[in-house]
Length: 224
Image 1 (cartoon, one colour):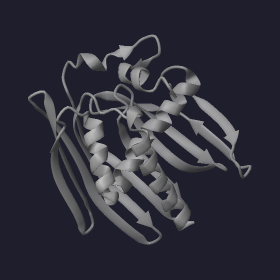
Image 2: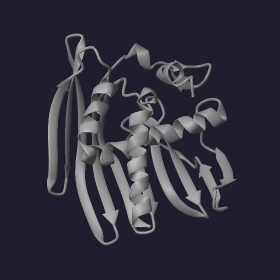
Image 3: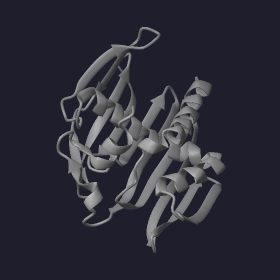
């Protein structure tokens, strides 16, 4: 079971890399997460901090993570590339960072999948049921919402055979995951945003009222 769980974590990291065109950090200037990784009785705790600073026409990107005894810091400049491209290039060079950042970014993919099902912005009260390849019932629901960091966020809950396996708290405007909780048996990946800062008056972050989704989502993910 442990191998299957960590294969899932690795897969989400890879999916985040391959799906970079559908990941957006526009409007975000700072993200700080508290991270916990549990394998049986072993628990690792740490932090992941990402900061974006305007540098002329480019961006300066600082990444710092610490997980128990492992620590990594770097600062990069976009030089014409998008912030997402630079961030994921860093992820590819540091697998440990990918294991932390991958599930966080993959959470956006879950939201976008629901947006495709609902043909708009998923709302509280959404419920979907199906069965997986093993015949187990799967359920995805949006039971509630709450305010964090001055913005509305929704809870997305995934159950398999009536057991909760995934809990996500997604900020609705920029789709930043505020809580990511993957669990299977005694294996668990958990992170929670401790600080989030957005640019003020960012015209590019206005909602597309026809679809209920941010403009970047319609522009970059229309091929899915």
